[in-house]
Amino acid sequence: MLLAAGCGGRPTTHHKPGTSHQEVTGGSGTLLAARDESGHRLREVPAEGAPAVRIASRPDTAGGWNIHLTVERFRFTPESVGGAAIPGRGYARVLVDGKEAGRAYGPWHHIPPGARAVTVRLHADDHTVWAVAGKPVEAALPLGSTHAPAPTPTTGRTVEITVTGTSVQPPPSRVELKKGEHLTLHVTVDRADTLHVHGYDRELPLAPGRPATLTLTVDRTGLFEVETHGSGLLLTQLVVR
Image 1 (cartoon, helix red, strand yellow):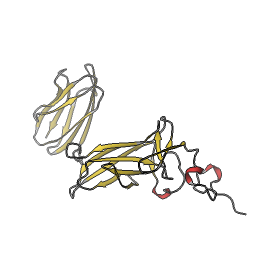
Image 2 (cartoon, one colour):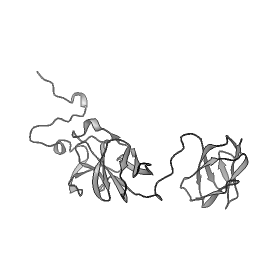
Image 3 (cartoon, one colour):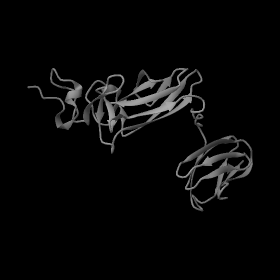
Image 4 (cartoon, rainbow, N blue to C red):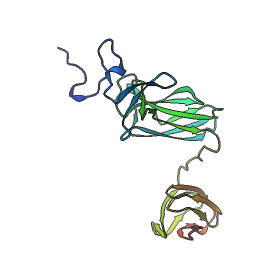
């Protein structure tokens, strides 16, 4: 006697003849009548606990852009695409300038030269579109030199600083660095201000509650102060040897 697959509550992709994956997996959210522009039905899930995606891009030296997808409450499952819709699993569909350009089964994807914008949409394994409040779970990003972040240094130091009123955390101290080393400053403030790195003449606008990042290569030796212009607070000191 054959035992049915999926015992013990384990998800299964099997279904009865004459029924589709979409029909058999209706318990994984609510299958809507609405479809996206490519004809894929939307699968509604509650906002709390729903998957999410963000996009970052950087130019590719051979042309085009490499985009990086950061997902939350979701994982790529290329091994089960075409199976049942299981919450938090699936793949991403990539649209370039509004037209379908392929699928992403992991965090990295290449966009060819000439593209102006990219949209990434999360799909379940059964090809339905994960949706919240009737809208697809997706992210969009304009492409171009002004939107592509600088390459992340492979080595270096990162300093996290938070300013609340006149309080600086961690308390200002000295950061020891070697000449030529990369330094990344992550600064969060509770009021509008400007970050200034003395000696390097580097400045960065600071907006309340929005972490700001400044990256530089410390290519000169000495003692350099990092402060806020508006409030005049010392954030840290850089000692470059």
